[in-house]
View 1 (cartoon, helix red, strand yellow):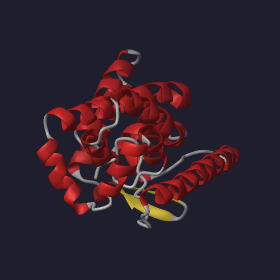
View 2: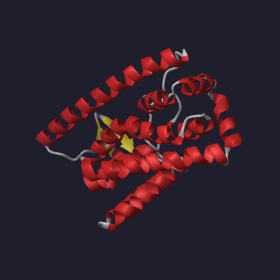
View 3: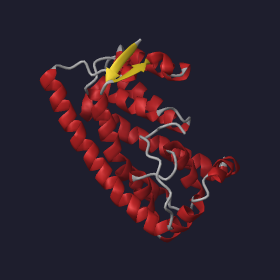
View 4: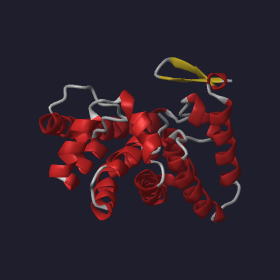
Length: 234
């Protein structure tokens, strides 16, 4: 099974069985109607903690519920899942997280910067992450940031990317489109979609560049950021 987006053919077979299982879950929730909203939100929270691919989950919310409701589901669910990961790292799994962070030597500089200006640094890291999203949730649990500052800064910083990916999902027609990248829209619908998507991407990229510059000034690191949607796997 394959589809096309911008001339690129994408085969569903290229995805892992686990990713296809998530697609099956999205199809199942789709048949539940209103009851699926709560189930999807809880699944998203678990997905953030368990390193599920968040791009699919975030776009899936847009596919199922549209931009407004999809964002209202994903935004609090991603923050709640991130908070659980933060608390697990802080009180349960410090050694495991520390071992994971050995591959990211710049985290020591990030930790020092957070100690000086915690809220600002968390906000910048959410806008332009220097670590994969799911790992960052755990890594920040090792810092001295206050829980409330972490929650509020995460909510604000993750919101732009959340809206972007939910919006992308909202124009898809089926779960198979989610994997294939096939929009299945008419000419004018496609034009409106791409215009809106370009504008949204431009805004997120612009904000990200500002955040990246500020992060580099704060930690003195030229390392290129790793940008992922809320909940993305490492």
